[in-house]
Length: 347
Image 1 (cartoon, rainbow, N blue to C red):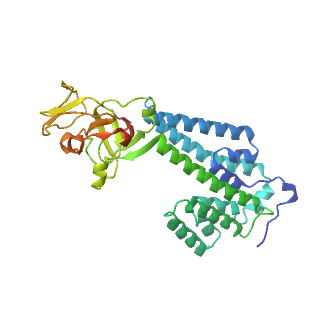
Image 2 (tube, rainbow, N blue to C red):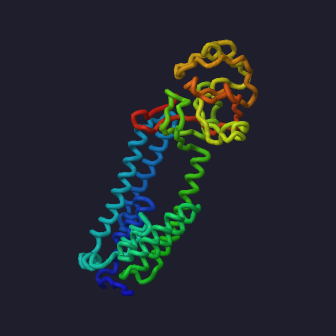
Image 3 (cartoon, rainbow, N blue to C red):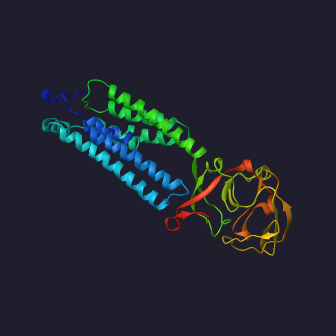
């Protein structure tokens, strides 16, 4: 394997595609590598601020989900610009003689970048067709096993680098460090996503019309999983919950989305489609239908709730299977973010 040596006058040259690879970890790092300290730190701070603001707007009950999604798309666009800018910053700082020599050969750091995007693409770039096919195939298979894709992807781009005919570094330390950093970064992101979706907020797809017209099949909603640590459940809340054990025993295991109607200690009855709470009729602007069979008065026990679907005549709810235990409630459905024309607060 040949090893390209940059001209002596270019001892301080840097790799444009290495800057791109660094920017994939987080926008701004590539600029720091290029020596653009203020630019790099400004980009990092801006990205962090935009992510935080867009996250608050999307998840918070007070935030505007439309503005949040626009900011999130702007943040993504800024990330793309940061990658391109990192490449440009390094390229412009390098001597023309080095850049001319660099572009004559297959760039190992470009092979790494392509492999990080799609395992096997880097090997295809360096004309290793069979390795490209094998890498991509094994990566697809590895998706079935937890954490294996992370390790395999790091190995693929490491190998794409060392398999390149020409390398400019005198040792493999930079690519080795990047492979380790990629594994650690991916694991950290996976842990972060797990913690967020388990304890803070999650996305749920609506698969039935039980909550029509409020929610319809195909809607994608945000579930706030921490809200009930700070406030009690309220009548009218739309909640995501696991079915009671009696339903799970009958193979109902998917989470339900319905509305809280009766609170602990309240007396609930249904007559002529109207719900009565403690003998007082309940105003339900959200309801569709309601000619269900009468439901005799019953008192909601402690730590339990009476839930109904908004689409009364086509809902499998507390009228059919009884009360919902508090422990089964996963969170409150707060916002709809898809489809775009129905984006907004769920109430």
